[in-house]
Length: 369
Ligand code: SF4
Image 1 (tube, helix red, strand yellow):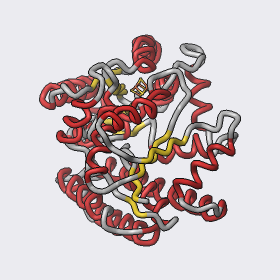
Image 2 (tube, helix red, strand yellow):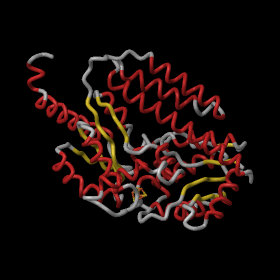
Image 3 (cartoon, protein in one colour):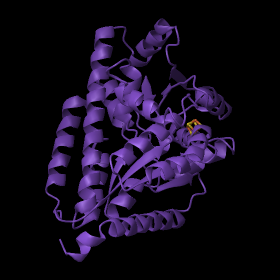
Image 4 (tube, protein in one colour):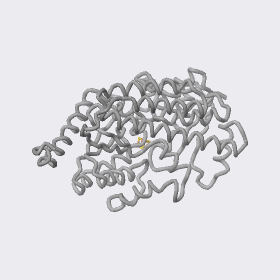
């Protein structure tokens, strides 16, 4: 069995460690690129949201590298993600690809069916081994997320912020060639040391921006046109409301421990949006309020064109902006998004945030302190 899965930010690193730990061969899709998107756009319905198009591109590129089994997560939520696995199966069938697709649907009262699928994907019936590997994969994912979070902080203060990009690019290249938990952990540690050695300006004033919105576009850098880097180069520290490791905690460790963060978001969102609208629409509202309460300078919502849950959230955000006096900008992405226009909007937003900061700190600036 040669397994593959679609890209979604750092998820591939945790999934790779998990599957390799179980002794499976993993065929990673090449890094998402224009070619990936072209393939996906060509074979997907025109009006479907961006993540499905990129997924299809990932599958085709992986199958061409020899993958014969695709692992994907399912959903029963009220947005198109609930149909993703069915549509993706049909598209690949129409393209003539003979691959096995294993879908991890939420248990929904049938936990044994989910377990059977996990055993099939893991190619073992040893539940202890599977659980151990899931924990190990989850730990790696958390370490990588922390590493990237750290790089975002360093980039905003670095004398040469592009050096951080080079270190992270090298990490993503090298992580494809290491295997298992130990080698991956070692590489993460080495990369952290390289980041520690980047010269930073401790006195540099930076802005703080929270990123909210549709999970895939927040997490996958190709889909959000590397927004963290672009903002980092403008002296902005970025925090993302959703990360692969927090998604895993929320979905695999339900209850008071795993989903405490989500529960707080729902509670904050309740006065504005108290029901599930699919995807992470409710979390977008809750996270925005949390960022405002934590004195962030601004918030950016990112969503794919036609994303239903985020359109609902977008209609509420102007009220949050007014009630909490915090600038919020929405960016919509699809296969037609142009990099230059995107960069211009980010620069204009950051200029506005600096202007507000200067006005709020007028006295301090005059006294030169
Ligand atoms: S959350 Fe939005 S982008 Fe994601 S699958 Fe649902 S509709 Fe599509």
